[in-house]
Length: 151
Length: 147
Image 1 (tube, rainbow over the protein chains, first blue to last red):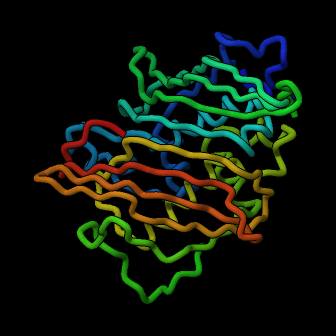
Image 2 (cartoon, rainbow over the protein chains, first blue to last red):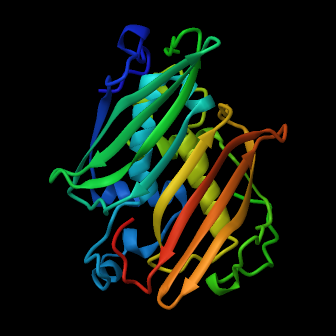
């Protein structure tokens, strides 16, 4: 589960540490809510008739909705540092569909400490219930004070 | 949502060229906007109870910047988002007015393959950059594989 108040503390802050995952079940109502909130009314997301006429065969969630789960995971783990120094580079590999359960995971791949600043690089991934990768990529975050990451 | 000239018709995909700069668009990360976003992504209670609650989620800021851009440019139906790069430079308190500067970083139309990379630079009221990013968008005449 997400841990906004704690974040990853220095003892956990080492290469290979898994970031607490975020699990979300997707439904059409959530996609519609996201369309309203973001203003992205692309019919591939909200128009079942249109979406069925495409090779995708039905509506899909907004990529930015699924990407928000990666940001949620990183914010939970790294607190304000994510908001001020976070970075991500991802590719959308497969669509997320209504009915899918998306599990977003991450792992610390490298940590570089220099002059009181800690640079952290993570691999991140969102997969559906069939373990198909929906999004994959890397995230980065920089902290100060020997990696004290909590808010 | 924005300060753009409402008389300007949105651009079509074929009008975009590499290097084209969209007019800047301003929008506010107000309480209701942030709340609506958090509700949509299922985080309203979590974020509201966290130490980060006075800030707007960076993905909300980015999503609204993309939307602001698409009000200037008619995204073809079925356009898909294939990649995203983002860097967060500054936490944005709820209520901040932001300005999104978008530019076509790259555009390629080859046969049925059409892609563009949109570069974003989002600044706050002090004209400081809060988020930069690149979004890759592909059109395949509805022969889409993924978003």
